[in-house]
Image 1 (cartoon, rainbow, N blue to C red):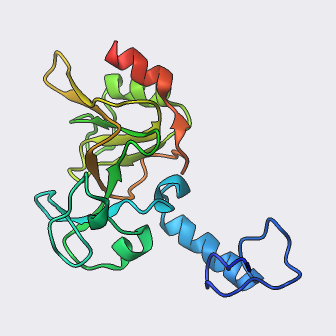
Image 2: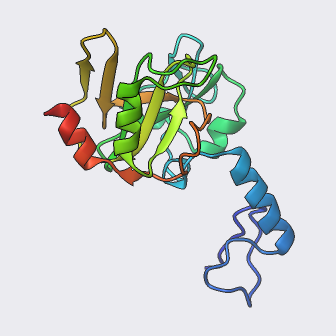
Length: 198
């Protein structure tokens, strides 16, 4: 079976290198530009667990019906969800099919100056090389990584803020607004998750 160019989706040349992802220098440059505009990790965009979302954070299908975080028939590919104009943005569904998890840090970022609360800065530091994005509210962060989390938890902090940890049966509203210089990968955050849930 012929491999396809990741940019134009045409068949790769017969003499291409085994590791090549594009069919030409032009497609390679275009793919690179597209990745710069879309910082989302490949580990997320290659999974068919995308939905659209309303302004009230209700998950929607690409045609505008209500989607479910537990019904794969209502999910779509990243490409189809990103191309849809339904709702106000995208969402990703966490499933027990894998170990993708999300840590949701509430009210930890001053959106005017971009300063992170010390408690949240410590969690981001301990997450290591994980993808971190700003939440839709602009004052929270979402840390994406890999760990085993079967039962989500909301951990209240003494100051009233919270850290939520989810691994299955939830959808998370996505913004694609990378925080700082976080990489576009899902790092192992098992140790961090264990310490927070202890």
